[in-house]
Length: 514
Image (cartoon, rainbow, N blue to C red; front, side, top):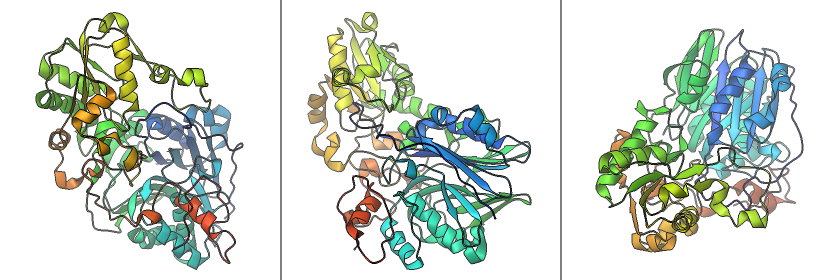
């Protein structure tokens, strides 16, 4: 088959460098559509727009028309990467979309997705990945044995996976290759991929990250969240099951099992990652967050005059806290909706303003008040420290901080880019130590038991490793895991006889091939 790939522009700087925020950074958003007769590129654009919160470093769309695959991607937000002219040029009936935050590999154009491969038979393969693999080093060694080489400059587990899938598909086709490859892949992965005519979707056996199936009048949609189905007018059908591979083509939809399901959905999706208008495992994310706030008010009451959220992720929990406590709810902080993760770095003068780039206090509302301030989580504590200081400077009499998740004490290896364990404030300090560190009058975190109860999911079906250190998918040695693993390996094997990685010059650790 003839394949075609085009893309844009030079590598841009890391959009996260020197930023004052210390929030947990999301993973990625994936979206796929099979819909003959529809403008699938525009449907995918709107789907990615709905998933923008999951990844704000790069965006890409591939479209296939039965004969070729065209890929367009670049660094930036969805609205920055695509315009009417580009979308109109992407014609076909199968599309794969991706918005990225890097959890493996640096922020470079080469690491943007969908990643593209060509099989030995000339068929194209476009793949988008949400999650993070934990046996990347093992897969790299397998790729070496098969002679698979990464695309120039690519240093992601996703590109490695695409390379193996394309290599295995040479004789048996992509669908059978996926059924044979995926049982050997460990970690968190929601995959949306396609050849020239068929859309595929797969979810790891633990179902760590969400993936849903939707129906259009003339086709099908798969997406990271139900909110993306809503925006394109697709009706929710069901979740893609853990360990399931779905294929959609002119013959319809077919489902295969490549592994026994062992559900361990990420509980942090309910806390922060997912949109509030999304539903996960039948439970509204917004309703969950409100209930978390109610339980937080019971576990950590406060004598105060006003409950205010840290917008936007703290808003539902603050509403719940106010409902349960009887303390009035109010808006004490205004968020600048247009300050996201920008490629333009703030000057030193602006950087010193810290949190005011995103949040500014309503002084008339908070002056002379005892405040309960509800936030979704604490990672390093820098944001909360600056926030408490700003509220006191604006006239707050007391600041009682309430957190709608337990203390984050462990890093995530399944697709969320938390700080290292040494940087997590809850890892080195007890509750009172954290309170003193951020300058609050009192501090309370919701308990893990209350958080799980609010999700209405059985504890056995949830991953809460960032809170309790219980990792459901076994991890390799420290030297064989990490965001810059493949970049480090590339440096370590430079000059060797048969390196798998032909390029990749990110700032990785100096790891060597074991």
